[in-house]
Every structure is written in structure tokens, then in C-alpha cells.
Image (cartoon, rainbow, N blue to C red):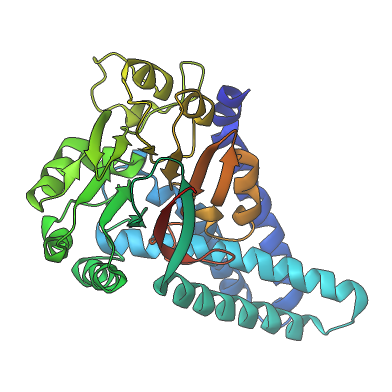
Length: 374
């Protein structure tokens, strides 16, 4: 069923684009047609068409784009989402209150601009959150900074990373884990952007995300290692009496959907969370923490006896209404959960994918306060 969903997804999106265009053009015709001449109305139709289809530009399958192209396409994508939201909202109000069409159109445009401004400010403000987690067998307290989905690229660079590093230093943590999508997958890798990580005097551990694979997993890992960061590739690292398990980005098992572009070496045997965990030998007397970019494979992770599973990837939906829809795709889409004794924490992430906007979600870096279970 999941295979069918992703196979038909491009068709669903194309139909949605057509419907959205027709809906918006019809509504703006009703708002402003008496005030606009035909050439201006034709231009409006063209603009709405490009806004509706702009999301295609940010898909990596369409090739490399300059930073400016990516920025324009991303903002247009967010604008479309908020424009539709504002139009629907005003249409609901019009059921109960009569407003002259011209003024209804002004309300739509004003609401859209306000939402855009708020969502950009919200996405640019990174909050430091604390999450206390108790683990049986933990020899001492550990404070770990969990960073995920930074998406360094056109919207975020050296200064952004410097700010994250300074906040990490202020948090006085014992280690840092980065659960993937350090870079965004649509632009060239800039190693200088992650240079501030050298300022951290605590161990840093990194696992790849799907965007890191798109930009080039080997290149990303080489750049990360140059910064003194430990890259975990389907292996166990013993840290302060804890087994830290880092997995590459992969499907949970052979039945799960997985895009081919997320497999860098097409000739290699396909690995899954299940197959990798089957080959790893854990010490039952030591607590264990597993890192994987996507919150998938919890069944196999729990069967392995993992104490804590850390992940990201979902952005908690990032933009309304995707903040609701993401819960239909991922059982554990954000926050703290417990599955048969395996504790799970899914971060909302720091950066954004596509539009540099957040509505209904927050940019966060999370201090995991790990405590021994009495």
C-alpha cells in the first residue's frame, strides 16, 4: 500500500496543482475582476500558475539550481500554501458575514503577507529545549545536545552554524549528536559553513540523512570528519558506558518503500534497519542509544532491546496543514514516545526544507538530560 501511495503521489500532486490554480484564479476573479483590466488579469493567472508549480523547481530530480533560483522557488512554494489557506479562511467567514468582494480580496492578501512574515520569523528563531529521559543502567547523568535537520544551504550558512555552536557551548553538554540532513540536497557543499563546529570541545557524532545522500554522502562525511566529528556508519561506538549506535539512512525492511536516489552505491547489497541490527552484537549489560535519521523501524529497534531511539526528518510537518498530515505518514512524527520500553525522541529539527518558513512547528535544538533510572 505504501509503495502504491508513493507511486501515485506525483499524479495526486499534479491534480492538486490544477485544482489549486482553478480555485485561486476563480476567487481572485471574484475579488478583483471589476477593478482589473484584462492584461493585468492575464498576468495574475500566469503568476498563480508559476507559484503553484514552483515546488517542482526545488526537487533535486530537476537538476542543480543556483541559490537565487532555489530561494525564489522556495518562497513561492510557501506563498502558495499560505495564499490557499487565507482564501479558504476568508471563504468560511463569507458564509456568515457579507463582505464586499474587493475588501475580501484585500483581507486575503493582507492575511497572506502577515502569515508569511510570521512564519519566516518563527523559522529563523531557534529555541533550546530540554527533555529529561531516564535510562536503566546508565552509569551517570549525561547531557547530550540533539541537533537534526540543519539543512545548511541557500538560507543557512556559516553564521547560522556559529549561532548553533554558541548555544551548544552555553548549554554545557557532554556530547552532541547530529541525526542527519546537515546539508540541504539542492546546492553545492560548502565545508566552510560547518567550520564553527571546531569550537566545540565535546565529542560530536554524525549520521547521514536523505539530503546528505542527495548532495553526496561520501563528500559530506569527508567534510564532517575534517571538522573532528565522528561519523557513525552502521556501527557501535562506546561512549561513557553507553553503546551509541549510528545507522545510515535506510528503509526499515525489504518491504518498505525507499527511493533509489537514496542509495549512493547502486551495486551494493541493499541494507535495511532490520538487516543491520541483526548483524550488530550489543552488550546487554550496557544501555544503548540508536541514531537514525527517520523515525522508522521501531519494531526492529525494540526487538534489539535498544533503550533510546533518536531521530528527526519529519520537521513536525513544518507548515500547516502538513503539521497534521505528517501524523498520518509517521506514527512517531514529533516529540517523546515509548514503545514497549524503547524510548523515542523525534526532533522538529533546526532548519527547513523548501520554504524558509514554519507555521505550526518550531525550530529547536534539544538538550537530552539523560538520568539513571533508580
